[in-house]
Length: 98
Image (cartoon, rainbow, N blue to C red; front, side, top):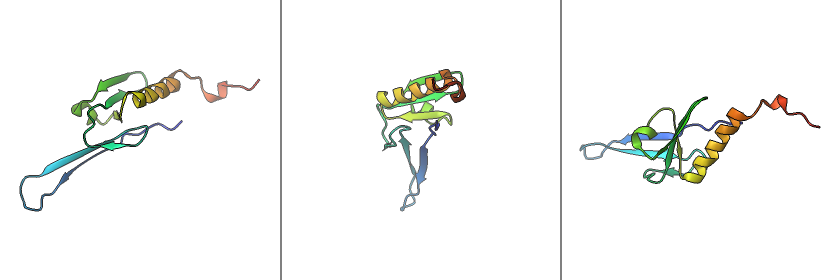
């Protein structure tokens, strides 16, 4: 099973006129790959081997190095299901054909 990776891009744009800099932050959904710079209805999931936390979109949580980003409830559920499978499923060698 391929583990999804965090795809966050943040960069600062250098202004042409020498005034203050603006920053553009884009987030990519772990499931479908859609990119948004305004992920209002998105979810953030932080997880490890023993714990999984689902957070309504919060920029601070989204910027965490362990954060994963999802464009909606359905894609967050896909990731949660995969996480349960990876934790709860016995090793592949335990499955035997009858």
